[in-house]
Image (tube, rainbow, N blue to C red; front, side, top):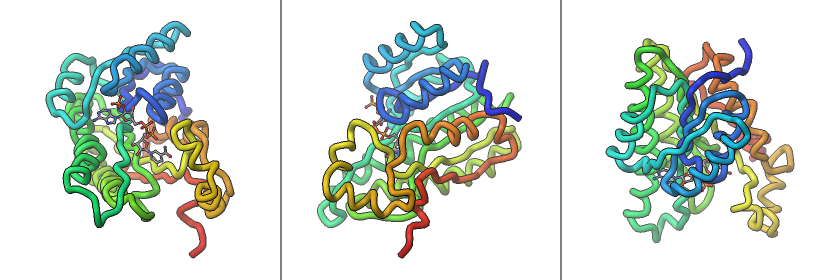
Length: 247
Ligand code: NDP
């Protein structure tokens, strides 16, 4: 089975920047009709227009994954999706000793409850014809680092949630898998990775380099397409070997 998403309808949450914008462009260039969703409506509208101007199929939809009404509104307006990329996320870094509970709760609300909310709405609309849900977790859902307690807990939750949903929804032909990127270089973090601390971190990655957005293309298309027809509940790390770095 080929890695094709041509003719499929895809939703990407958190598509206004970073990985989400890249995934939306990748899916559109691969022939899918893509809905870019996020809170910053000007950014997703501009990105969708840019894709349409290249004769690709794209539209934008305002979405706050922490609002059940916002999630319900998007799905009630849209035709069922074949592919849903649950990518919206926030970092909420900070010392666990000093973190306010509200900050912890915000991270869980976006990264974990938001993923559940979108996956549930997607599954209800996919029930009749099946589909693929790809949850963007992180290697921090599998191992820990300093000052990311809320984030790491939320991503570990996404990984376990992925498996639980895969189990419940396999009978409807709905596949649910998780992608765990390692450290991916984007304009937002390139200054940090150029610093001494950043260089030391990169040195601990067995492949001795950061990931690029393009490094995620193959795994994302694999999970989104029918090439992974017999995969559900899988957790794929894309991290240059970071998870297997020596102790
Ligand atoms: P960005 O900050 O660039 O993008 C995050 C996206 O999430 C934005 O489009 C933002 O859009 C959206 N978002 C945040 N909150 C909400 C919300 N409540 N409702 C809807 N959309 C929301 O980060 P990245 O691209 O780096 O991260 C994308 C995903 O990849 C995250 O889940 C992150 O945890 C994961 N990841 C990233 C890694 C990396 O190295 N960059 C590594 C591992 C995982 P808006 O503000 O417009 O709503």
